[in-house]
Image (cartoon, rainbow, N blue to C red):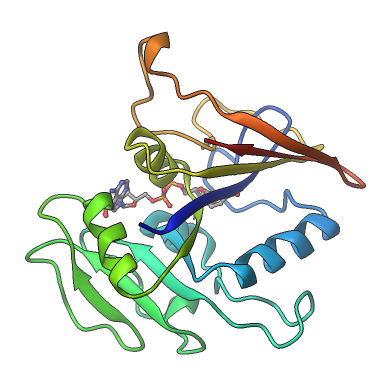
Length: 209
Ligand SMILES: NC(=O)c1ccc[n+]([C@@H]2O[C@H](COP(=O)([O-])OP(=O)(O)OC[C@H]3O[C@@H](n4cnc5c(N)ncnc54)[C@H](OP(=O)(O)O)[C@@H]3O)[C@@H](O)[C@H]2O)c1
């Protein structure tokens, strides 16, 4: 199975976007450079369809941060094929794969659409699919719903979180891990802290599962 690395940035109060789910700049410049180097070192970058809709990020490695980037495969988990056709991930600048569910597949320009599950994307099945495609390292960038699915299914090998110096607030603002959450303390995964690195305006915490 591919090595799964989760990477996200959050505010001091543990939010990854504002309560209107608008993308916010949380990484500082040195963290942005780190994220782009990390993207370049991975074979694929994965996000959920709601991050595509909210952020419309290209998920490309910027040449500003990496010379001659390799441009990893872009992967979207999108059970109902809701990815807007004019999204940046469909700009044809790198390979894009959309995983969807039975009955929702439809052709999308500049993307391969793969059926993987009946209701929601079956993460285990999807990872097995990526393995067959020789994808050895998968960077999961969010959002909180997708990260919950990876963590609750015990599919995460590394968890990196940049804590910025901003405060966002809002009970409905997304966090690094949303979904239903664990109830019982015995279920909580415990990670091993392997590194903490201060930058000009925040701190990066790197954990292994
Ligand atoms: N600060 C950061 O590092 C960072 C990074 C990324 C995103 N964000 C923020 O996060 C927010 C979006 O997060 P989000 O939690 O709303 O959405 P999300 O995690 O990006 O996407 C969730 C959607 O993915 C689809 N999905 C397909 N298969 C799934 C599976 N197996 N498990 C879970 N979901 C699956 C579901 O929609 P369907 O049922 O329709 O398929 C689900 O609603 C935005 O505000 C964005 O700005 C922040």
